[in-house]
Image 1 (cartoon, rainbow, N blue to C red):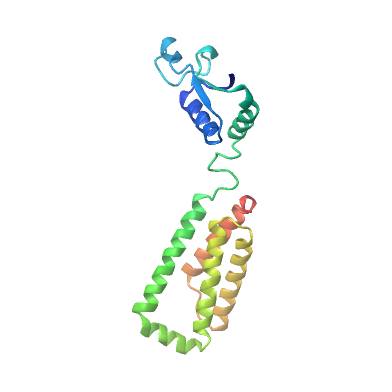
Image 2: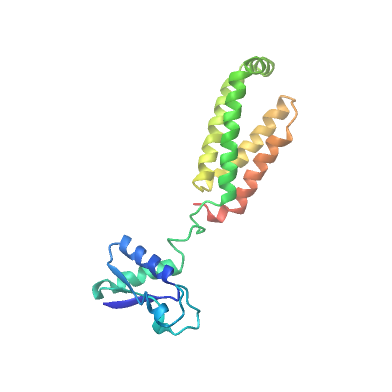
Length: 198
């Protein structure tokens, strides 16, 4: 067997062992009790403690090369870091959830305030219902793009903002600050995290 990893923290060694075992490599953590033998009485050692008492991860000789690559990926945060480039930032997650909740409010408005909806549809024109359906379908597509961190969602968001403002101005209706604020926040987050998107 060969030693492939050691750290002053047994938890890190156990995590590395679990990564290796999930990838089909049998691994063993040695020196688990060395911290107590050394008189330190802790599972976390000081960085300047002698390496001989650090917990170590060992693998079979045949698995040494593959284990080394997996450990390098772990140490470079390529596959196991939640904040890696493929992860979705919490701000985008919150905005998507907030907007989806807004759609439930819209459905409630359409169901329980049908008189107001009919009055608005009569004022706007016959195209209102197809427009509402089409624009909401594009909004859902755009939320899916943000949720899955796709670059095209930023372009779609920009198009939807411009189209929404133009449509509102053409109808000579006021633009509500809430509508434009939420859209601009989503677009700002898309621009901020654009490099992390696929």
